[in-house]
Length: 70
Image (cartoon, rainbow, N blue to C red; front, side):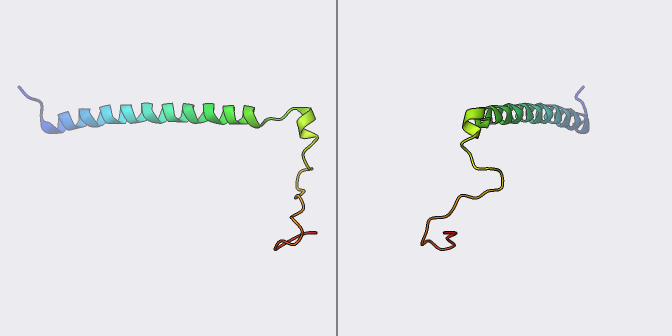
C-alpha cells in the first residue's frame, strides 16, 4: 500500500530541511575559519605595527590634488 502524498511530501520536506541545516552549519564553519585565517594574516608583529600611523590619523593627501591637506 502506498503512503498518502502528504506523508511523502512531509518526509521530503524533512529531508530538505535537514540538508539545508547541514549546509548552513558547514557554511558558518567555513566563514569562521576564513575569518580566523584573515585575522591571523592581518595581525602584525610589534616591529611592523610601530611603522603604522597612530589610530585615527590620516596620511596627508598629495599636494595639489582636490581635497589636499598640504
